[in-house]
Length: 463
Image 1 (cartoon, rainbow, N blue to C red):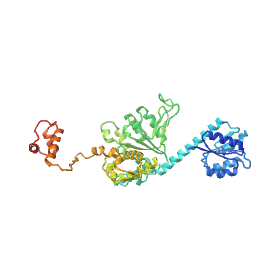
Image 2 (image 1 turned 30 degrees about the vertical axis):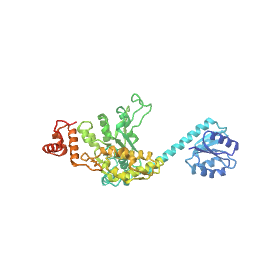
Image 3 (image 1 turned 180 degrees about the vertical axis):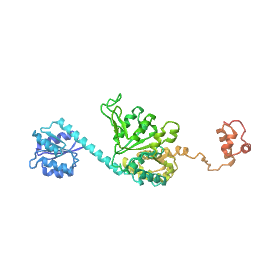
């Protein structure tokens, strides 16, 4: 998409020259030589940047600039004039002009100023986009599903959110949505208007963990940047900090973290003065920290400090009544993202989804829906679209006690079925009849009787 530049200059030659140059640079250009026309043109053209002459025949360009700045503050206005008057330049900048250029306009300078203005436009658009995303992603209870287990967890999370600084330990398997629950607690807390920062402890190199969490002074260690770096605790000051996968922190870092949680103070690496912070800490883990304490890989005192309050998120296989809602939610997300017309899921797919074990939980379901939605051109997702998870993997996920017996269309004698079953069981047990009898739920004598009856040789092993 081309950026749009609106040129307002009553000197027709200058306007035409700028039009030619800017068009060559790849911009979409609209010219205007009369101030009266400028108001309507801005509304119709919706420019990204305005180039405005300070001296117009019938109007003062500064007045027009003030109008643009008041009415369209998101559009950078670059003032141009043929008079090297510093006072005018200062007035223009004070009244909201983005920059100031003198005639005759230097092409290199023009490119530089436009690039700077358009970077500002892009940045503002990105910020607006992020604000809209945050607004759209306000986490309501409905967002999580209607399953009774998940609703009980949400009730607990809402109650815990009311405390301004209580540490909460969020447990759950990988992919259950621990980070989303942490955001839910933050959004329902007194700190909701402050920053929410997340750091994954599993991804921090051990030698950089202290710097990442607490920051460092310039030159504090080899490779340290030439300026002071703020750690995550300082960046989260006044808000909420989520320490994801906290079980991956080294014992040394666990000791330093414990001190910060207790005293709300720490030293940046290389600093002589302590830094105080007001941060609410949430911790998430897919490990059983009590077991980690027992085997010596997690500090007991830190565990009890983190475990002031705890919520445990159920895996997806325990909330199958939410699977259809989640699948449709992801379908809507990715259909919009990829510009697809796909809008429905066949009932048999939902049925199989509810039987599938989802070891990766919601993250796995989301990834599956993204892949299938991206690859399909159909309006409905069918069984065939999910062959990559619902074929071999569905077989692997079946209960160990179940098996599939295929009956030929012409039928089969029961003795042949029993003979095949016993022979295969003996093969699995390497001919050990005691083990084979146990697998088949028979006594050893009854197994031997069946083997003799069906003509199966009683040998040490069967190949």
